[in-house]
Structure formats: structure tokens, C-alpha cells
Amino acid sequence: MLEQGYHQKRVLITGGLGMIGSSIAVRLAPLEADITILDAELPMYGANSFNIETIRDQVRIVNLDIRDRHGLAQLDWNFDLIFNLAGQVSHNDSMKDPYLDTEINYLGQLNVLELVRARNPKARLFFSGSRLQFGKIDTVPVAEHQPQRPLTPYALNKSAAENLYLFYHRMYGIPVTIFRIANPYGPRGQMKHSKYCIVNWFIRQAMEGKPITIFGDGSQMRDYIYIDDLVEAIVRAMTTPGMEGEVFNVGSGAGTSFRDMVATVVDTVGTGSYHHVEWPADYVNVETGDYISDITKLKRSFDWQPSISIEEGVRRTVDYYRNHGQHYFSLPAQSK
Image (cartoon, rainbow, N blue to C red; front, side, top):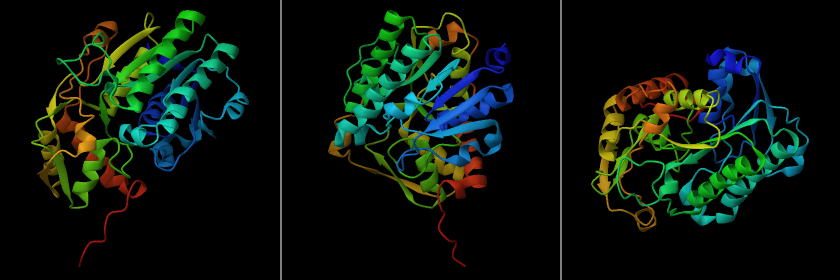
């Protein structure tokens, strides 16, 4: 049972104040896991202390950057499970500053792996990769064996870090599990800018009554996975035997056109609009084409099935921000 897998287990979640990390913490707290959240709280990323408001007294928080080897070395690494979610998450920003992306998304991962190797090689690790590792897509749905042809430093470093994890598994026996995640969205996602978590950003635009921009005709297909479905897959994978050293694609397994996703957001919020523009040069160069995850391997490995449709997921997300939006962004004052 899932409860037995986490009851009183020592859990570390890096990037634990972001959407995925905090949602894992919220999922595990009722199971009486002993949870430590590590987060650098870098201003442009998704860390938000309100994300753990309901479990604040059930977790400990360490303000630390995974690039800080000295600081990391001061921690007690006697963890049973480590969810390594800290990262630079904007593929466009990675082209502007590939050094920063490499420092966080590759060298930061190496820092964690080296400390685990030296101090606690039995700890089980989870690494969050990205669907962008595949680059240009030949056929959909995309299975794990399809070639990786990264188009940005972000995707390149995710692929390199994935191989780093697999190397430490082969050479040192460290149990690692790797997901290549499609487009996650939902409660606790950042809404400060459009550089990632695009569904959440569009929800903010609609709530503010602003027009949403669609590049091209909006026919490009994407796989959007609701945060609760993603978290359930992650926490089950980490306690299922036989998942060590494995790589899985994860998403909803269903494709939604960009245009239909935007229309769903506008219809659900009830305000806002959208319009079409030509593809900007810095976007068209890294556009992958249609992407839908082949989740056959994951579903066969343990009892998991995505259950939240894009319509239901957007509705839940809108409800969350209507109740808690003041902790994520400020709505404009209403005219009298």
C-alpha cells in the first residue's frame, strides 16, 4: 500500500516550494512522511510558501541552492526517498543564459548525486526530465525509445542529467527513477510570467480580461497533464519495486490542440479573449511539432491511470486561483 511506502519515511524534496514539489509534499503529509523541503526561492521561478500553507507545521524548510556544494554538504543525507525537482525551467531562458541552465540543471544534479553516492547510496531518487528532450517529433504518440534531439540548452541539459542519473545507477547501484514530463498545469503553479506553466499563465490572462496570443493557427497538439495525476504517478513509481533504473514518459496520453486549450481557458474563466499572430523567429526555431506522450510503459508498470480531462483540470485550476489568486498575482482593481 502507498501508506506503508511513506509512513515515517524520511523524504527530501528539492525545489519543494514549486508546483510539483509542493504538491508531492501535500500528498505525502497525510501519510505521515517525515518531509524536508529544500528550495533556493529564486525570484523568477515557481517557489511560493503559500503552496504548503495547509501542511506548514508538518514539514521543515531549508533555504538552499543545489548549486551550493558546501551548503548541501552540511545536510544530513540520511533520507529514504529524494525527489530532485530543483531546476531552471525555461527553455527560452536557457538560450539566453546557457551557463545558468547548465549550473542548475546539470551540475546541481551532479552535486546531489555525489552526496548520495558518498553518504547514502541506498536512497531512492526521482529525477524530473522533460518532453522537450525529444526535440523535433517524428511520430505521435511519443514512446521512450524515440531519439532525443534537444533544441535548447535546457533540453540538452535535461538529457545529459538523465544520463548522469542512469550512470550513477549502473556504476554505484543508486536506485533512480526518471520521468520525462509533458506539460503540467494546475493549482500551485507559478503565474508570474509565461516562460513555463503556460496553462496557468493563460488562466491569469483570462482572469485579468486580457487577450491571449496564439502562435500560428493553434493546431499544434500538446499533452497537458493535471498536477494531481502527475503527482500520483510520481509517488507510486517511487514505492513500486522494479522501477529502479527506468525511464518513463508521463502525460495524460491525450492530445489537445493549442487553440482548444486556450478556448477552454477562456470559456471556463468567462472573461478574456484570444487572437492569432505569426510565429516569432525565436519560437519557431525550437517548436517541436505535435507532442502526445505514449504512457503505455508507465500504465503497465503499476496501477496508475490519468483521470482528469483538460476541461476538468482547467475548471479545478480556475477555482483554486479564484480562491487563492492573491497569493500568486494581483488582479486589477474593478472599475465602479
